[in-house]
Length: 235
Image (cartoon, rainbow, N blue to C red; front, side):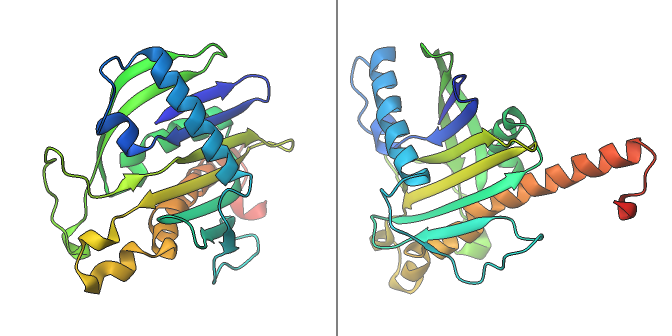
């Protein structure tokens, strides 16, 4: 995962790197320059998915507009693997949003642990963090929680992450992209539709992140209101 703060546009980007670039075949001289090159390439591909047309997106069925909506959610059509994209507004500062999203074990129950392996600084004042993340399937998902096995890859994360920008009226606008190759050929045929469904990815991961942010934003706004002695129902 890479965390980058661009002070020119006051945006924060956190994103996942391609799994195989770092963990499967790293070069013998995995220098900071090589990692920066990979990070720049990954950033460009992620931004093309988040705000461009690198992936053909179609709006997800069943998403109702209105004040209770978490945002706009779309799923991929015809791309490699499965992908989901969401855009929403939350009443939190962008640095706070980035901190919450980076703490995945707190809101993503399939994430078992996240360890920071290395931290590098960039020339534009940003930071690159190399993370080791463990995910597992629950028993209810036909998969026990297994310890990590050498050379075992269940899925590949393609350039994904979060683009967070400040909103003029307060809060932050966030774009979320989740793109994975879940290796559907490696699972029993009866389970294959789940591994080929971008809708499942959107519901389990993409929308979970937005819901968690909206929940924290709601709690913060309620605490601010009650601190001034007002009743939340009167606002």
